[in-house]
Length: 269
Image 1 (tube, rainbow, N blue to C red):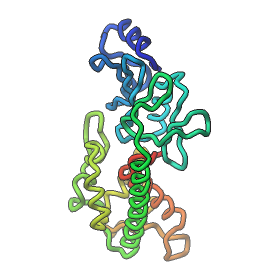
Image 2 (tube, rainbow, N blue to C red; image 1 turned 30 degrees about the vertical axis):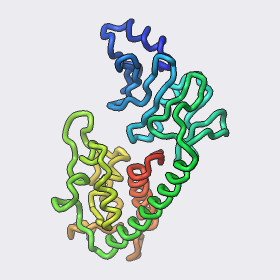
Image 3 (cartoon, rainbow, N blue to C red; image 1 turned 45 degrees about the vertical axis):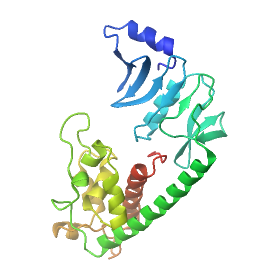
């Protein structure tokens, strides 16, 4: 992995294309004016400046792969990105937290944070994230209560477009339109208006990478309700109550999906 300016320039100059060259799977180094960008898929996750400072940006994809690539781009700088209960932090050593990670953070060659956020802002963000987490939990309670009341249909044409429309080609193939456009405004509105969109649960399961989503969902949802065009968690063995494990997994994935999109510093893994 390219970690320093001269190293990156030398690597680019050695290729046929002097402006873009692959490093490893789905990752390239590219020129950005006087800077060098480490690009993962479509996001410049790290931009190395001529003074060897580096600016990090997840593009909203706080995944294990993004974190691994960023940490490798940090090279021998005495800081790394770590996670504590799903929240990313900048660490010096194994346990010394310097600050919470944020997109746009710039770190010097020596590991100093060049654009730190003040403590008051950090506190306000923590409070806002806590409130959003509680709002998401209340939304999910209503979501699954609606399912249990046989009041939620299977995904269809009446769903939110950003949730229901799936990109059919290009680098975002298979993603919901809202995810491809990095648009979370519709999700904020769903939480605010208690709009329980059927496609939301399917999208939460979709990001798990299942090839046959219908087959997967049929294992978690009640068959009789499905045949009636409704969504309800499958029943427990010999019971009319929801299967505990199925309900737990569906809630876990929906919660993870919403928190990933609505709480910017919350990692997906």
